[in-house]
Every structure is written in structure tokens, then in C-alpha cells.
Length: 131
Image 1 (cartoon, rainbow, N blue to C red):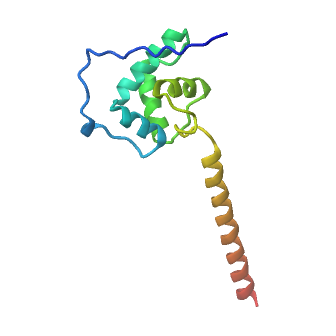
Image 2 (image 1 turned 45 degrees about the vertical axis):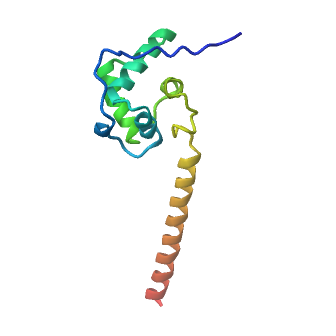
């Protein structure tokens, strides 16, 4: 079975956004959007068109606008359906868009190690005060 990805074109009647006016958090998803010169609204519209062409039901455009912002700012991670759509839309892997947990796991391991070191220091200082 052959699966083809059809990425519908976005609305070309909308005036292009000047790249200098585009902003985002420094996240993989945000950088992918900026690399294309797309506004968040253009991403939302492209997600709707792509999902529609695949026959997938997704959130409304106003809800997606909020979600795209939250995804780019790292507030929440896109769910599996949206990860597939975003990877297809940006022609990127989950790693490239920051969807894998490897980076988060390393960060978490660093935090745990830092907390353990702080706990050891505090325990040592408490022992010195008690003596």
C-alpha cells in the first residue's frame, strides 16, 4: 500500500507577512515556522486544510491559534494527531520539531542531579550545625 502526503496550498490571497514582523519563542517548532516565513495564522490555516484533505477532524481555527502559540512557547506539547500534521506541514521529523522526549529527559536528569547535589550540601551543612 502506498501512502502519499498531499500538502494543500495555503490561501494565497492573504497578504504575505513580512519576515521582520514575525516573532516566536526560540523553540524548534517556532524556528520551523519562522524558517518558512509563516505567521501563526498561516500555520493554523494550513493545519486545517491538511487535516481536511486527509479527512481528519481537528479543532477550530480559533482554538488552533491558541494551541499553536502554546505549542511554540512550550506550555504544552501537541498530541499525536497534531504532531503528525505538523511534521507533514513543515516536512520535518519529530526530533527536528522538538517532539521527542530525549531532550526533555536529559533536562530532567540534569535537574534531578542538581537537586541531589543540593540535598547533599544541605545535609552536610545540617550535620555541621548539629555538631
